[in-house]
Length: 343
Image (tube, rainbow, N blue to C red; front, side, top):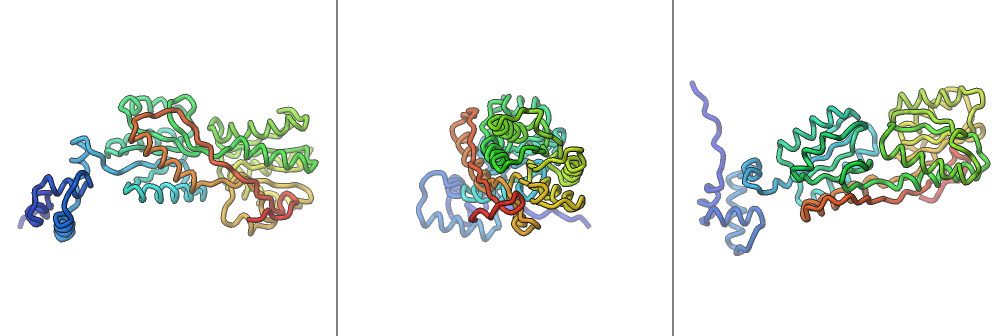
């Protein structure tokens, strides 16, 4: 016995039930052009009655928008990116956009493959937090005028708008605070090498160190790759040096939490023996022992701004290399020997 596939409702079926032309149905469902309230009511009722869903691929082939954008991030396990997704989805939903989310796990080859898949799905634009590595592959999509905005990290060698935190200023203020407390032996646990966030934060640290008469060689640098396990190992290496640092500044939330674990593991008192500062606040930071001082970012606001910037590029077709910096805030808690900053 043969089984026929279920019949797909077509635009003309909605038009027949609503007693209007297919052009009128298309105009009403796409909100393009005028239509009477009576016709609009009949079309929307017919579409619901027939469970009509537009054929987005067909629309794309006709040169129309799909109201779908891609969001490609490097590490969904990090709560920072969860909050960024929230901001993107809030702003996208307000515009009637759908968001297809992808996780690269900080793998540039996987990123390239995922971006290709999204383009094949006829996305209207892409919000990308780039993985570390060469982005030469983006050239072919920019030639095809795919609207792209980078978020959290910038690609300085490509003509793309970027939305980031003010990483330089945030790191500068945190380092300046530690040095002003008289702490001179500073260890810094870097995130992913060769990405703009790591570079800008390190530059901010070095500017503050220079103001206190310290050179680049006076900062103990370890790489934690923005991950818990590597951050933990980097913190242990800092604690096991002959001249133990007086403070550790970890460049993201996962590594800061891991550094505190390492401090407890080595039975070092925080902040009495060593101060600790993190970059990016997170839900349990204030509940740790001791509560963690951080440079607070605004990932939700970053996501909202990225959608706004992408909408501008889609509408104007002008992918100007503009940089939007979202301000940070220094939140002082007991891990650096301070009273808690008012929340």
